[in-house]
Length: 600
Image 1 (cartoon, rainbow, N blue to C red):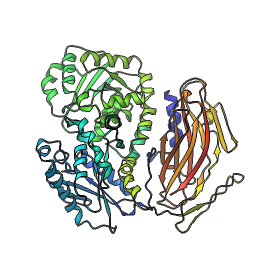
Image 2: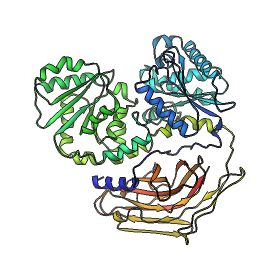
Image 3: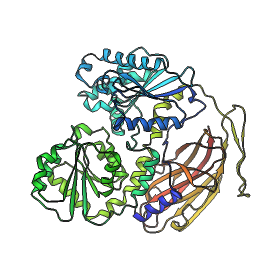
Image 4: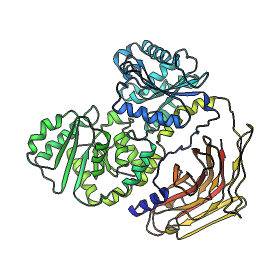
């Protein structure tokens, strides 16, 4: 995708400063009619202080869960001083309860019973606005072994555990552990989430079991800021100037510390013209070992100690390319937020084949994947990037959007709660919509509320095009109840264009909308990506909320939905289909069986 194409799309998507980006790709929304009993609980034994990664992670989830209508509780280490929404609960670190530590592995039943006891005691005296609550206890730093052992224990009333496989990379017999996950399928009080789509595939193929993969949103910010940073990164002037190379990995196990050390040793005897390097050096060991050898040279900078998020991200803003030398044995399916830092900052990542990072880069067609992280291979990758900066950077905006469309904080909360919601009895809400009369474009739909008799569907109409300046031809016609929509883009390969649904009005604050479309893409080979978008906005004001789903670019029929929870009564909603074309004279062709807006 060309830089101009990225700017065209993002300027359209924003119109006014974007305040939130989220997506629910093929998943269940937050139905307020069913979720009234749920309390979202984060079990975080490593949360000990008000600063650091774990505290920020809790704050992201708290805001998102509250926005979805769920009360939120954090269960922290007993070293935490009690405060609002955070309860000191755990006597051991997360690795103990996840059975990643040897002492716990030798006595797994005792470790799991201690975890259950500490959770139930912390929640026993909770005083909140809900009678007879169901506590959804999310264990981010969990493991498959922990989930299986919890499934073998007697359930505690009104507590459901949702366990992420974070520590599975430390399990020496992880394939055998995956084979035991079938026990979870037969109990109501435990749900398991694969820690990544790579692990999900391993379990699917190796154990014949299917579990959802946990979304991995950007750790450093909520969905609002993630979207805004994505948009701004497309405008960062990085196609020219001196080359700036960032090594952002910490020196902890599995993150390629030896590879970085070897590269710096080589760099001491070399001077690369018009190139500078920045090395993350949290414990100061790299500077202590190598710093004096650089003398008065200014082409190497070492970032020592703890650094706050804002100044840390400025290094990404300044960098062109980042070397992330994570090792395959530790990160084959384990995720990393530093890759997302790159995608949202306009930085091209260099990663090692066989890691989760490489799997993401290959899936998104972005970055450079190396066979190893030898000094020679790192040099080769840097030269490869520098020889064609613009081409490598041109893929970043679309790749970042595709990543965020499947990895938002909203999706994370939804992924944890949707299995529990599915087990609760349905309590539908009635909202009647009178479809807008297409002959009276200024007339608004009326909203009426009534008794609980079910959802009512509105049928929005198509108008064209979304992008007049990026569309050379466009038509929509209806034949036998099927809408045939087709648009052709200019021959510069990559502009976004497509079809806009007419604006429609109507629902009360707090209600959830689902925009659903059944369609077939008739020109899949001509397209890179197709997106279904839903926006909420105040009449005569800016857009305030956007959801995006990434469609499959295949010629098979598919059903795609996006969800949105209304913030205010009487808001206006706009739906659209956008396509990113591959090459010259590309076209988007859609055969649309049904389009519906449903209030849940």
